[in-house]
Length: 116
Image 1 (cartoon, rainbow, N blue to C red):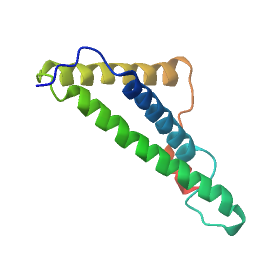
Image 2 (image 1 turned 90 degrees about the vertical axis):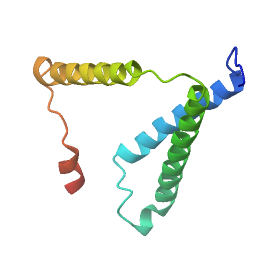
Image 3 (image 1 turned 45 degrees about the vertical axis):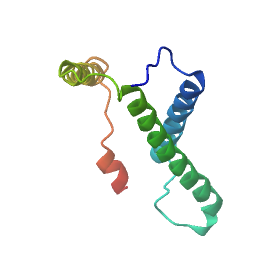
Image 4 (image 1 turned 135 degrees about the horizontal axis):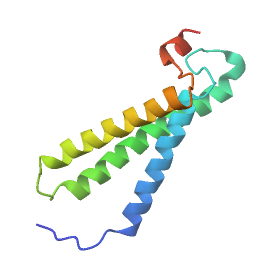
């Protein structure tokens, strides 16, 4: 069993870059550019957009591998995933209630956005 006392800064930098790649992918996917419609007029933009999609998916793979590397020798505890689910549900509904009822924001329905 390998004992890791501190984290390697180059691996942490790779993790940060992979997070950035994931954010870039979200921007490319959810932006106003309709990448699923093929038009020769926008071929250059389509190539850039598809490259950003690839870059983001690569970032997800790298992020998962780094996370597995640091978690592979930890002892499994049932409280950790349950605690993560409860915190995620609490904040998700809290933010939704805040946006919907307090700020009275019209939330976007992505199914309707894709249909137009």
